[in-house]
Length: 136
Image (cartoon, rainbow, N blue to C red; front, side, top):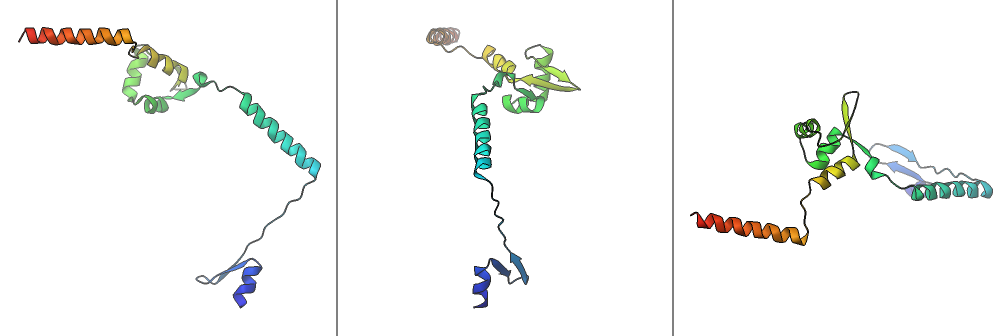
């Protein structure tokens, strides 16, 4: 019965270590007007964050992040910089790239996938196979 009153008053006994742990909850009171003012401020911050457009193209990434994002080695990224295939900024020996420049790179290197392109690609493949069979 001794453990029942300890449990009721928030005292928990650790039998393994013979230590008593006391759990205390602090109750903070605030005036209603202060609470409403705080909630209005939080609501205005939330509204402002929702309205701000995120400029992903202007987001700066470092070399390691770009290598992970594009699955490239640092050497390949270095070659791309030297060939001016990718725009970058160098600050105190570190290279930084904008997500917009990476997007432009990916779009410029993407394979066209329109229906006419696929048909011409199929025709070229057929003619290649026919020529290869003719020379055998």
